[in-house]
Amino acid sequence: MNIMKLHIVVLIEKYKKVTEVAAELGVKQPTVSFHMKNLETELGTPLFQYRSGRVLLTEAGRTLYQYAVKIVALAADAERSVKQFSSPSQGQLKLESSYIPGSYVLPKAMSQLMLDFPGIELSMSVHADRELRERLRVRETPLALLHTSECNDDTFHFQRIEQDEPVLIFAPGHPFEESPELTAELAVREPWVQHAAGSALRGIADKWAQLNSVRLWNRTVLDSPELIKSLVSEAGGVAIYSKKGIQREVAQNRLRYAPLPGIQPEKGGFFIAWRKDHLLTPLEEAVLDYFAQRPAQ
Image 1 (tube, one colour):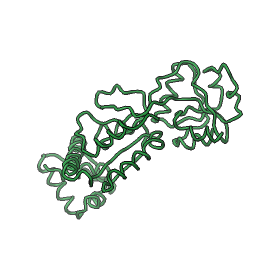
Image 2: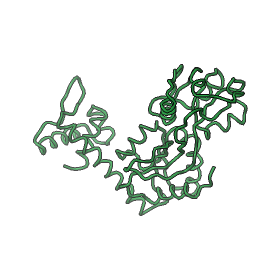
Image 3: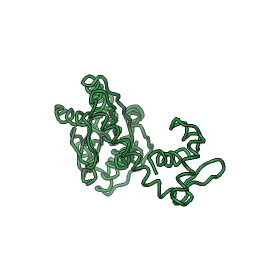
Image 4: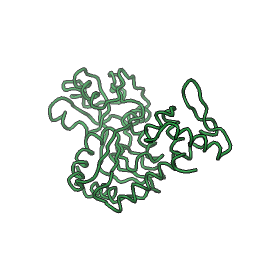
């Protein structure tokens, strides 16, 4: 058993086509088929089954997959780490973020890193907070920028970048703008524009509703934080949003906000997280140093 064979198992689960696995690995289809047969012979049990032109994992194959995906990720992580020690200014840096810090924190950080390390290759992507935690857990990304108040996961190290608080946003001229005694009960009577399930702000909204024993009647659910701001500004309604994420719209008189009424969830903020068993590369340490030395915003 070697990394190539295990990588094939991982890619079969992903693509379910031998041709696509071969294309990603840069080898010919017979080579992939040979390794698949060889692995089944080596382990003495069927790992793959063919149905309607697709290749699926058997129960034994799925069991092997659980280990293969970790081993392949560890091997790639090890190779990347060792190469960066030999040439720290010309390596690869992968950083993933949840939506809000990905829009308001990460671009400036990436720009500075490009200036400090002009030879590196940067990769950035954005995911919902729940998905991002899982990607970090299974080693699909070494560093993750989270928008959260929950830092009690023993699997990760957390380093705070900025504090933030959730607020209730609405358009200028909304009755809440002049309401001195806004309550949770009044707030939930408004049409709500809600964040998609799995996002940090959706979790905060649900937690706030639970703490105040109220129910949110979601008129609209969107998976784009920027679109939520635009919809609230143009069409009315209310939404929960990051205070850091509305500074421009407030300055431009496009949005107003109020503190969340009633019992408030923990304020939380933006954190960079990494697995406790992950050996940081010089570039990844540079990222942590950048955020540690970054002036409070």
